[in-house]
Length: 260
Image 1 (cartoon, one colour):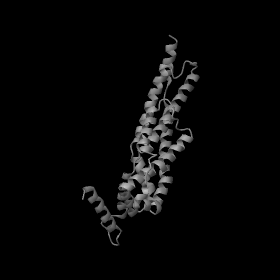
Image 2 (cartoon, helix red, strand yellow):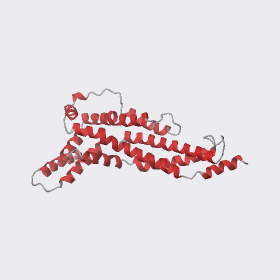
Image 3 (spheres, helix red, strand yellow):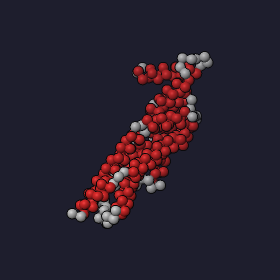
Image 4 (tube, one colour):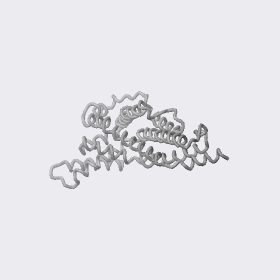
């Protein structure tokens, strides 16, 4: 037996002991936390993060361009103050990097995703159920089912939310890298591949019985909420940082160049 299999078997054995009357070797809360940690480790946050990168980047770009246009009007710079001016491009580049730093700090570390989902799962699962789902997702059929749930139930819902509310524009200049990364992540999961999950009895059972039903329902509601709240908060932080930024040096540099 492989070391990882031994560790999992030991965990389940300890879990059974902890649930037995009089067992005091491991606190029940600790066993639940361990089971939830195992479960969260099976999930892949890449799609959620890549959607977030696009949303925040584009929110930042819109705020940057709006701020620069407004600052130019207030300074009376005239029609030559536009994205073709080197000073505009320099300002947009600097503020764009500030947005990238916020994305890196707030989205790329997956702790927020796993902690948020673990907290939501803790409200609907006990230790034994969390362990059962984690073990299921580590099987061949369970992995396919998990990818399907993450992509088609959660990913498509989150993506549609931002696309249909015009917070994702697939043609926006300046966010090509983020769009490409999202597309690569999405297509790597083969969204249109036919997946015959009916040949896996554990997959059918997960889809039709608890704890699978209640866990999937939790992901479709609280799980999506964790993702959208984090993305929206990060976008708001990026916009606030841009609004607070000083672009006067770029305005002055443009004015001086035009008056030479």
